[in-house]
Structures are given as structure tokens and as C-alpha cells.
Length: 212
Image (tube, rainbow, N blue to C red; front, side, top):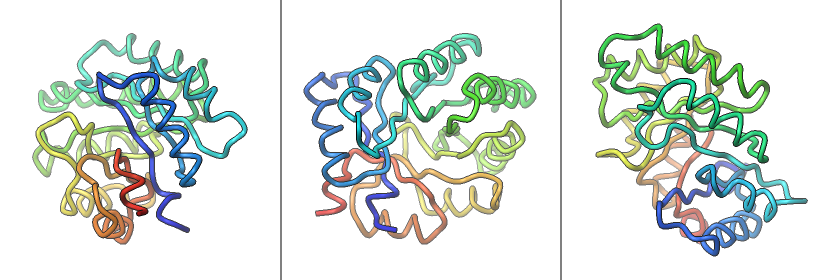
């Protein structure tokens, strides 16, 4: 499988224009990326631009803080799916996790997975804010809740993906969930190292540079 097949070509900038999103989709088709990942307001446009292509469409919800109500996240997820998203990348409630409200974190992930049915759910645990024990706990909760992926980062926190975190997450989830490395993946060598460590998807805004 080529590197392009691992890439979620991403633009989540608050300043992203309609022209930027169109360019993102055109690049995804040109390079054969697995998916594009955008904010919810851009789903209808991206869906239109990706029509009749093999590129999947992912939307972020609860982004980037994860601190809104569960009901708001569920509504957002359903709305994105209704508008054409194939996959949902959700941010966990980091404050709940760090407060020991583990049942609430698990139940929220499970509720969103139930709401989107057979669509892919990636759970962003925002590793930069967590201890190693908390990272393992977050991964375990995501697996228990039926998530398809655990994901390192939003790209909006104090740090992005690291090799150490991916190794830890892979050990925690085994074959029960896949892993997406996101945040700071800007060159081919780094991307290939993540794949070697067991990552199934790479979230990056530098996809064309990785392949060039």
C-alpha cells in the first residue's frame, strides 16, 4: 500500500476559505489520499467536490477542546453524517478524563458511535495533556466504547504525535482498534516511521509535501 493510502489530507484552520477546501479536495483526488478531514461547515462543499472519487470524507466534532456537552457532540456527529461525512473524528472530554469521570468519557464515546452506526469513529485523546497512565486509560475507554480508531492529537494542543505515544497506544489497543497519528507529521521519513510502528492513518496538512 502506498503512503498516499494512509493520509487524511487535513485543513481545520479557522481561516480556511472555500477556495482552500476546494484545493484540499482536488489535491486529495490528484494524489490518491485516503480521505480529507474538514470542519463540519465544509462537509457539503467537500462532498460535492469529492463526488465520483474514492476519497473518503472525515469531519471533526467537539473540536478542538472536546468540552461541549455530550448532546451537542451527538447532534454535530449526526449532522455531519447527514451532510455526507463517511468518518467522524471526535475529541474526548479531557477534563472529565483527568477528573476520573471514566464512565462518562466511555459513555460519551459509545453514544457517538451508536449515533453514527457503521461509520468510522476516531477518538482524539489529545496526548499532549495526558500522563502515560491517562493515555492508556483513554485508549482502553475508546476500545470499550466500540471506537474504530484512537488518534493522538487535534493539532491545536501544546504538542502533536510522537513515536513514544504511538508505541504506548499500540500496546494499549493491540488489534482492538487502529491508530491515527496526527499533529506535526510534515515529512516522508516521519510518516513512514509511524506506519512502521503500526499506525493505520496519518492526519496531516502536508500530504503533497510528503509525496513530493
